[in-house]
Amino acid sequence: MRLRNFLYSGVAMAFLFLSACQSPKNESATMLIYGGTIYTVDTNQPLIEAVAIKDNIILFAGSLAEAEKFKTDQTQLINLEGKTMTPGLIEGHGHFMGLGYNELNLDLMHTTSYQEIVAAVAEKVKTAAPGEWITGRGWHQNKWKEMPADMVNGFQTHDMLSAVSPDNPVYLRHASGHAGFANAKAMEIAGVTVMSKEGINKFEVEGGEVMRDAMGRPTGIFNERAEYLITKHIPESTPEKDIKAFELAVAACHRNGITGFHDAGIGRETIALYKEMKTLDKMKIRLYGMLTGWDKELLSEWYEKGPVIDPDNLLTLRSVKLNCDGALGSRGAWLLEPYTDRPGHFGHETLPMEFVKETALNGLQKGFQICSHAIGDRANREILDRYEAAFTALPDLAVDHRFRIEHAQHLHPDDIPRFAELGVIPAMQAIHMSSDRPWAIDRLGEQRIKEGAYMWQSLLQSGIPIVNGTDVPVEPMNPVASFYASVSRKTLKGSPDGGYEPAEKMTREQALRSYTLDAAYGAFEEDIKGSITVGKLADFTIFNQDLMKVAEKDLLNTKVVMTIFDGKVVYEE
Image 1 (cartoon, rainbow, N blue to C red):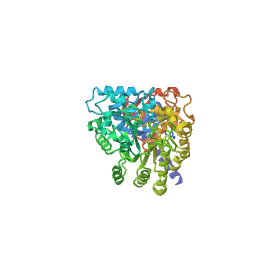
Image 2 (image 1 turned 180 degrees about the vertical axis):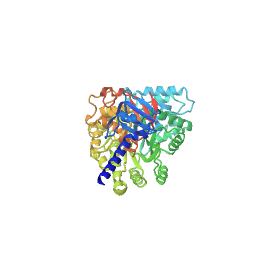
Image 3 (image 1 turned 120 degrees about the vertical axis):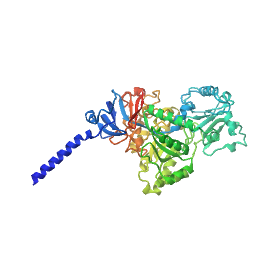
Image 4 (image 1 turned 60 degrees about the horizontal axis):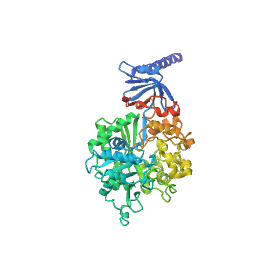
C-alpha cells in the first residue's frame, strides 16, 4: 500500500513537473526582446538576456533559451543588437502641460543673455497682432554669460524688453516658474505701471513681491504669488491649443524614454482634459496627478469622492500638491537664515503652514498622499513638523502614507534623518544640482551648501528612497542629463573635477532605481511598474549604450533610441 502510494505520488509529481516545464507552450508572447544588456532593477535577477511580453504584461524575464519557448509565428521580435534596456523611466516631478506649452510658446531655456530674450521677443512681435499677448518661459539670470548694466536685486529691468514690444503685453516666466518678467504694456493692463510711495502698499502681496527700484518703479519682476497680478490678465487657452500641447508633451516623453509622469499640481480644467484624452485613446503615458493645493474648493470635492486609481494604469489621482515656498534662483526659497547675497531677506512662505497641517490631516483621513514643494531649509523643517503633527494625531491612519517633499534641496543637517524617521519621501531633481550649484553657493554660503544642499547619499543611507526627475519645464526633460548629475555631481560641462560635494553622489544603481522602481514606489505603483518583473507592465527604455558601465565622460552621449509603452513601440530613432 505504501509502495503504491509512493509510486502514485511519484507519478503525480512527475506529471506536475512536466506540466510546469511545458507551461510556456500554453502561453504565447506578442513581443520578444533580446540581443542586448537588460537591467531589470529587480534584485532577484538584476541582469537578464530576454523579455517576453503578452499584450501589455511581462510574461517572462530571464534567459533567451527559456524566453524562446513563448515565441510563435505571430510574436514580434525586437533584437536590441547590443543596445541596453531598462524599465521604462518615470519622470518623478514635472509639469506635463508646461512641457507641451513650452514647445508652443517662446522657449527661453537656452538663452544666455538678456539681449537674447529681447531679440526673441522682437522676432515674435513681427508676427503677433497688436494687443496679442506674448508669453514664454525658461530664462534664468544666473545662467547668463553676461549681465545687463541696469539690475535691481540681481534681476534685469524691463526697459529693453518694453522698447521692442510697445503694443504687445509680454510675460516671460522664470525657468523655476516662481517668478516672471513683464513689459510695460503688461503692467499697464494690470494697473501697476506707476507705483508711487502711496501706491506701493496696494500691490504688496503676501507670499510674493513686486520688485521695484529705489524710486518705487516696478522693474518688471514679479516674484512668487505676485505673479498673479499679471497672469490673471492673460487670456485663457483654447481647447485646440490644449490638445496640441498635450500631444506634444506625450511625444516629448516618448523621445526621452519616459513612460510614467508625476504631474506636480493640476487643476480641474487639466483633469477634464486628461479624462478626455484617455477617452479618445490619446493617453499614451501613465500620469500620476497631484491636485493643486491652491484650489480649496477642488480639494473639498475630491476629499468627498476620494482617490481615483485607474484600473487601466493610465490616469491616477490620489495626491495633493502644496506650494510652500519659492525657488532659490528668484530668492523665494524660505530659509532659516538670511540669503548670503541679500541680507535681511529670508524668502517667502507661499502657503500658511496651518493649511499644510490641515491638508496633511485631510490626506490621512481621505486617503490622499500629500506632496509639498519645499526648497529652503526652513520650508522643509516647517513641513516636516506639520506632517509629524498629523501622524501623531492620527497614528492608525499614518501607516504607509508615503507623504512627500518635492525638491527638498536645502536641508538643515538636523532634519536630514527626519525623512526616514517619518517615512517622508524626498522627490529630488538631480539636474537642479548640476544647473544651480555653481551659483547656489552665492545664495547660501559655503557652510549651508556643504552641510545641507542636495544631500542624496545622506538621505539614501538614512533608509529612505529618492524619487528623481527634472521638474520639466524648469529643466529640459532629459533623464540622461539628470542621471549624469546624480552620479557625477558635475555641471553638464563636466566641472568641477571630482564633482561638487562628491560624498553625496549616487551610485549608478541608485540613480537608475530613483528613475524607475523608487519613482514607482513614490506613487504606490511599485507592484505594477518600475522593474522588469513578471506580471508588471511592459514599459521599457532602450539606450544606444550601456549607461551603467560607460565611462563617466561619455555618459552624456547616451541617447534613447526606442521607447516601448504598454507593450508597443511608441518611439524609435
